[in-house]
Amino acid sequence: MGASSINSISEFLLQAGTEYRIFDMGRRLTPIETQAFLNIENGTVPAPYPRQQHGWFGIVFWNKNASEQYYIWFVKLPLDERGLVVLASRNHFLEIIVDALGQSIADEGKQHQSLPDNPYSFVPGQALLAQFNALVKITLTQPLSDHICHVEAYLQAPQVADWQALPLQAVTDFAFSLPQSNKREKLEQALVANISLFATPFLHTLMESCENCEISEQLEEVFSNWMLQDDEVNIAALRSLSCAQKHDVVYRNLATLLESKKADKVDILSVIAARHFTQLDANLLMLFFEACARVDASDLHQGALFSGFFSDLVQIPTLRNDVLAVLRNPERSDTLSKAIGLLFSTMRGRS
Image 1: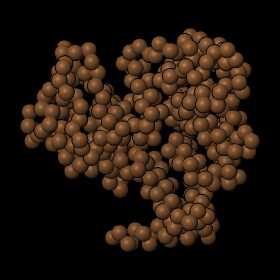
Image 2: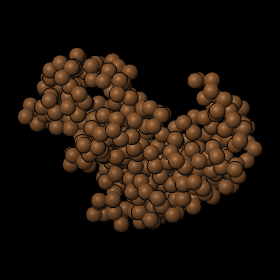
Image 3: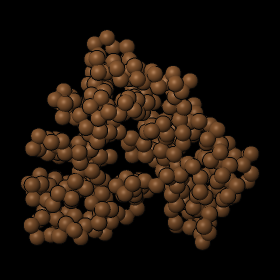
């Protein structure tokens, strides 16, 4: 199987005799239909959840005729200014894997399942990797962590159970499995009743594990209240409120944060951009970029912070027009106008 005969990552996986699933790992962790991924990697449609000018993907594959083993590749593909995959980079990645692996990627006992060193692989952070593992297991109906029962025991009796004995993967598997659990109501009631008793590291891990789950209205209300305790923004709670669709309660929370200037911190703005982009309409984008400009000016980033967020968000297909409209909004503040001026100066310097 020569590199010249392979035209896509999808075709490579098929010709190698594997079955596979693709997961977007950009701004949201979500499965992608095989045809949708083919369109993305061929540059015919933009990547739906770009991050840092790349599309981020987890590829799970197996050959059930050769092995019961599942294998995983983590691949990031550069995007152009329109959010389309740069085909030269995709083709370079194909050349690397075809030359190195041939057709043996799912043969038991071989080391061909591991990608050779290349500029397109990435290693997910610990929390994202745990979430990816949980979603893959649920998608492929694989067993979840044996320690979920211990997580449930801690939720119901935090005074006596030991939170330090709970693995990250168990907490994450619990969060992903909760929506389908036949004990959901009982467990959520215990969570709400005992939330003030939980060890802070456990609570933060649990809330962060929910960022790619659809949580109930009850948990949403609790996490929303927790987000602004002591007049400080709890970033783990903010992450837990991430939604795949527009959501009135989350939208109002974000508007309150941005209008009050409590979000004027780089880490908070980063979470809003990365996890709450589905809530950003023309109004919230103006509030968001005004905050970016203020932080940029106060922390002496010399335009780099604003430029980074602008370049990141403008590649999201659903936001592109509204992000570009910020540049023309006559009601922007002087601080934002200066940040936009620095952005244009940087762009001219690169041309």
